[in-house]
Image 1 (tube, rainbow, N blue to C red):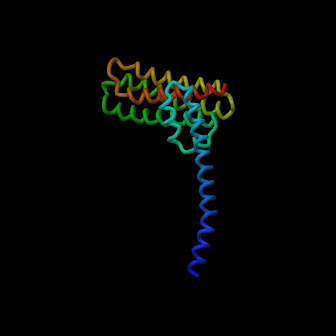
Image 2 (image 1 turned 90 degrees about the vertical axis):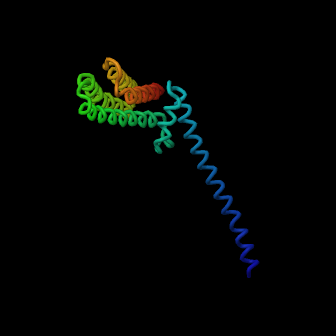
Image 3 (image 1 turned 45 degrees about the horizontal axis):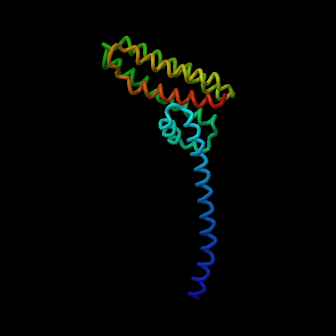
Length: 178
């Protein structure tokens, strides 16, 4: 009885092992294809590492096409812009002497969140990448303008750079859709 049970296990485990191996290799192939699309897409942006890191941090990027990757990147820009605007609001309370440039930046980031990003998302969803590119380019310009509004050291340098650079990446990805 013991021998027949051992033989049964051996015969049943081999097909099970083979099926598991095939499924694993298929999953790796799909993941590899997704990483290949992300890598190929990001090669067409000025910040390859930022692009790859940003996109792979979002699980849905593994099943996205280029249009989907552009939408994901625009969402990343929106998140960074929200974070920056929240920081600006806090900084206005902490550093009243920086009121003028901070209010200018608040206005710039409000424009990013209420005009530029919605324009880019709507354009991508409607299949009009030129308007999406305009929206993401405008977001990059707004972030740079904010940084330039400070006469000296800006408390927003890292945040402005993050919004600028991710906006430029989003713009480059949307340009691939033209």
